[in-house]
Structures are given as C-alpha cells and as structure tokens.
Image (cartoon, rainbow, N blue to C red; front, side):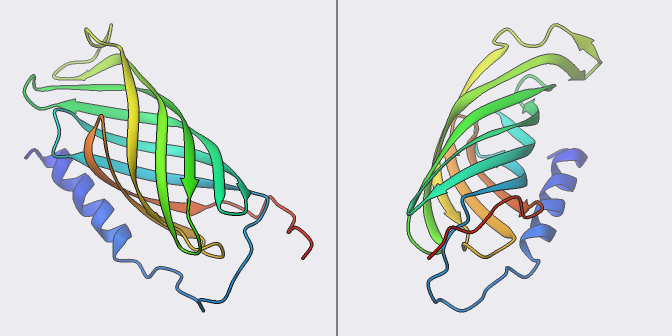
Length: 172
C-alpha cells in the first residue's frame, strides 16, 4: 500500500471517529431539501476511487432523491497509474428514521493521468459507469452521515457533512 493510500485511509478513519450527532429517537421530519459535502474511498476492487463530492437531496417522506457531483481520483494498482477526473450521479435513498438503503447511478470521466507522470489523455476507458448500492446512516436532524457501499469501485466507505440550512420546514 503506497503512502497516499495510507494517508487517505487514516484521514477517513479520523473522520469516522468523530462523534456522530446522536439525539433522541423521536420522530423528526426531514427538511424539503439539503446540501452536503462528502468524501468517499473505495477499496477491495480492481480500482481504488477517492472522491470529494457535493450532494443535493430532495426529501419526501421516506424517499430521498438527489444528485451528486465532484472530483474523483482513481488508482489502478495493477497498472501503477492514477487518474484525475469528474463524477456525476443520481442518488436514491429509502428508509425510515436514521437507516437508509442508498443507490447511485452515474458516470465518472478521467481525462488526466497524474501518476506516474502528468499528462492529458486519460485512460483507455475514459467513461466509467458508477453503480453502487449500500447502507447510509443519516438521522434527519444530524449534520453528518456515514455510508458503506458496494459497486463499480469495489467496497467503499464515506462520510459527509451538511452545509448551511437552505430549506424551510414543511408545516406539520
């Protein structure tokens, strides 16, 4: 495991050790919409994706739909190559309370080779489909979430933080 991979794993582990916002288990309504910044690292796969994303979710009862986009660095360990690119996906969450099924469908494009040397041109497969399914722990009133997923990037973990309150609560 190279130094960058170790650093990213330690960084993500330190985020996971931060206390989650665990409050009472009473029913708390979701806002109409919310925005998040999230980090994700995949492992146990053919590639190792590391991403920093912006997410925007629209909430309705127990179904949450949204979009996610950001920067992704993808490491191909067998080829000793690392690529930089962009990511865009649709998000589907379903569940009650704090626990949710999460699905993502989108694409990642890698136009820049950054290791072993910088060049443009990307990979032989510049367009990589993103399909993931997993579990997401996200209480309605929390400013953080945690996710574990399986998909085209292998098995991965992620954590996100809520941005400013950009919503109006629905009337009860």
